[in-house]
Image (cartoon, rainbow, N blue to C red; front, side):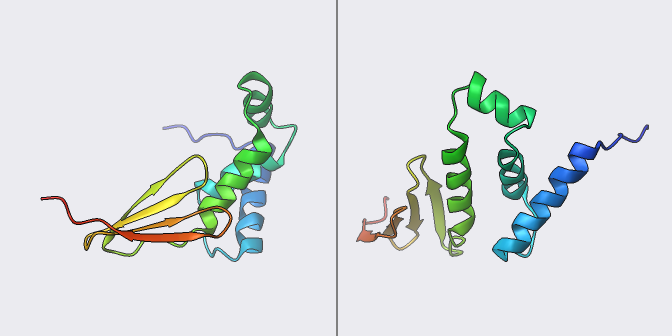
Length: 115
């Protein structure tokens, strides 16, 4: 199998993703960091396509990706749902539902487990 050629843009994007992860103190480089690296380059083809052909607000998308990274992982007994408005909702086995809002508010309620 032939090896794939790695372009200078590819290597620079990886380096930028690593720097973003390092600056954030994340300790790993994930797809989210790659997305932030791509969005940070206003001249990249993916950023151009998203912004001008798809009508996506790339600044808002970058903010949402960073918010995703900033949210602590769910506890082992929880299932997580993330919403486009930035809310993160954790549903626990004991019926607790915790909603975290982008402005820092946290709402906790209890729903009886469904039978």
